[in-house]
Image (cartoon, rainbow, N blue to C red; front, side, top):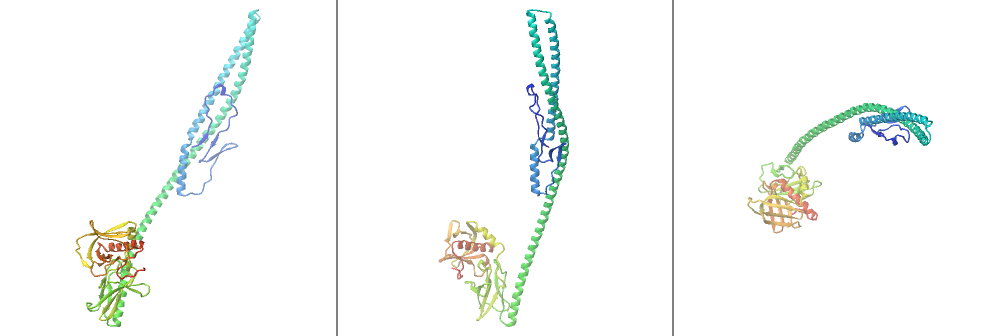
Length: 469
């Protein structure tokens, strides 16, 4: 389709027949199809050079812009119709000039006959009638001169109209040629567009298939990672167990002293239990648990941890745990094979809870100031950014801001519920042991409260724990 500048040839009046200048050649303006330029032998088609291959996004955007531009331009068929209308108008105008010329010729003949009749009458009359005939002859001469001038004007108009008709005929033939060539180019463009659309669809399909293959491979890799992780965990636990057995065996070979070891997973949320390999009674033995720094042998006493079992709490993560057994003045040591590992996903879970102004936990009060309590009532522990609150319904048991007198840690006594129990001393005259539904909730509550307390320049620790300030 082509945008072209045309001359609207309508019906002209007699005063508009004379042209102010010669007819100009048709100027065809091209934008996206092959560019036309005026040459010595007419219109020459110049095909644009193939540009570099653009990206898929640029190609789609360019094709869309071309379609919108072509939609706004007149079509080739409309251009041809305009040329046909102009040619028909010029033909009608030429016929009209011919008819006017014939009418003038007839008038010229009539004037000549009239003048001859008046000449013959002028010799036959005299007096007043002769003067009237003389005046009539003069009028006929004037009309003859006017008709002669009009005839010359019509001849000029005929020449101009003939030239216009010839130019229009040539332009119409050129337009037909352009229409045919443009139709062929349009068909070629349509075929190219269809091929481009097919290529785009093929590329998109290939990308979709590639994405599906990548997604499947990613899932396979993820599953393999899970399997390898489980295998690594099993191998790590097996290695730790073998190291413990080797150490105990070496000790047992060196002396006949009782050998002790720690059973249980060395991770947060588990329970460590002190066991003896020899048939030795521990009823008269005393036990004390320590935290040992991974670098060096510096150890820290865990106040209140004097049972055969101990549940690691968040403060123990990244450190070794060591149990010392004093049996009849002879001290034996059992130590974890590696530092205590954090629970999977617990840190991210706590980071999510930190964004909330406060978090609530359903708990059971196990002890109040060391005295056991019935476990059939559910309380709500609310941990906020500035304070902690324990309530049962509308009854508030404790509500205190974070302070240096507040203590918080995992329960350091025995019992199977130790991994799910927390020791909380909101003030000096009140201490509570709270039981949570899971060990994950117990550990997240301790980590969340310590995080909020640090924001208030307070460090929450257990009894006897060392703090930086």
